[in-house]
Image 1: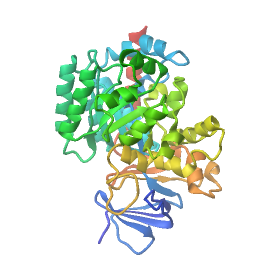
Image 2 (image 1 turned 120 degrees about the vertical axis):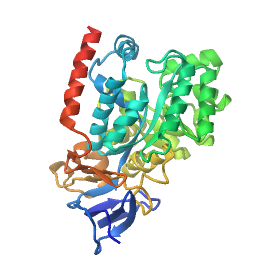
Image 3 (image 1 turned 60 degrees about the horizontal axis):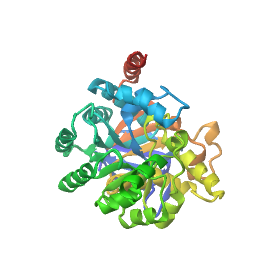
Image 4 (image 1 turned 90 degrees about the horizontal axis):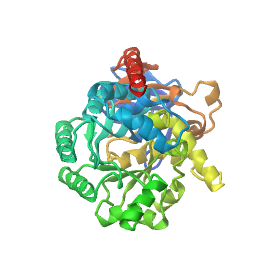
Length: 434
């Protein structure tokens, strides 16, 4: 059998159930799937990539973000969340249009590919434009149009939001890379009717539900004042605590909340850097992992991070919880890499096709250069990934069997053109705020 792609001469971190590590390994790809994982042997392939003794690992999965917001990063910093939203973000979002969203999404896709992310999960406005950008860049994704009680700059009234969501699901449902979910924004920006309708659409099409949950103390207070319960208890009462729910943030959780999340098989996405920057708090991730809850990693949007580099996020996740617990053994490197790979796949309902390097899975693979000063010596690859590596160490990104970045050069999009267009939009945004 002739392979379409072979990756050789690298240290393979499979991230499979046995967590196999293969030295001097070979990954064989036929079309979009992995057909061989093991030690090097004689083979024939249309294209051969020499990993040059680097690390071959599954593509990283950014399980929660808002990619169009890359055009807002650095716009307003070091101010309270309320002021940041009301004086900067909300005024811009009222002027959102498809062209701005498309450019911001392309910029984010380029950044993610160049820093080793091959799959992302998004919630924002004009999500069909995000889908178009992801498709052009060749990225895998799970997308949701944000649903709110108040009018959207995309669809207007919420009834049109339901129509848009169903149309969006139908449009992309056969695509190999683009997946669609239902996106009720938060328990306090969505009425009970909106939340229940979101669940209804999710069940109709058998797709995930994405929501921001227990992110801030403000949210906790709002829901308790209105419903007499925590946000998690409230969602349980109306039927949203279920295996299809992807809950981002989950910062302010009681033991009862965590037990409900565990019992409902809800998937949690941790956004450490965003929660730190906005002073939202520290999510009890070690406790959730100990309980057996699936916890993945997300960057959130670039406006509140300010990058989409999951290597930096992994480093922060590991260190934040060590100091929070005053225990250096908490959040070990292997667990953190799992959060960015196989746990991310489980959170998005894609564990059967991505998240590990195994025969039969889709070929979403990255190669990490270890022949650098900051990655030398490399006694343990997991330690190197979490505590030393950055996104700029990624040399190759392969998605669905296609090489989308080779030797740091993007092959699917023109980075210079994207940057030029992004700068043009930034000038326009400055005028809107002046």
